[in-house]
Image (tube, rainbow, N blue to C red; front, side, top):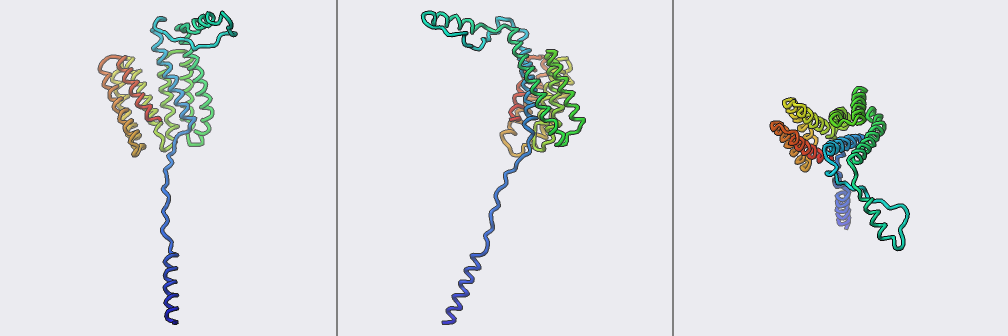
Length: 279
């Protein structure tokens, strides 16, 4: 009897010791949080994008005649209500007035007003971001370089000269790149350098410096390599990067055709490919 009790105790002890052993806990998978640039810095870049885009729209409008500008004013409500028998006739007259096409000068005035407003916004955004840039490690030299670029850009807008706006705007991208570099996983630094190169190559070609334009486009290769390293296994963005690389190659090839219009088309395609990488 005693032997049976002892055996039961031993078996029970073995079962308890086995059940008390801790099962190896599964460590939760860590989702890597990539360090991306400040939203305010991105907003500054987007603001420069908007100004250059609108400047190009103005450049397209300038040579057009009034007949080619069939843009209608947005519909607005008339002053006061129309009732009774007059309702139908007055309504038709109001519609005729509301749909009067904008003149060329009105269209241009609206575009410039939008650009002026956006320029002011960029200065406010920079004022908000400057302190963050310094805390993040931006040098006084880089900060001053950007300020000079932004001021030159603003003066070009004030003078209403499209070629200067494109030139100083692209230089603003270049000086902005240093701030994006402060965020180790962000690709906007090198994308800004590529954007600068695309615009500057176009400007050089427009002035007749074809070889200079080719050299500028060649400089983008090292930036594309660095971007690819940061993208890791992101197949969608890698595909977009390949399209950008091909777009730049096409732009370079078009330099041999002696056509600024063709070059502008290839430039815009490359910029569109680049935009897909900024998202």
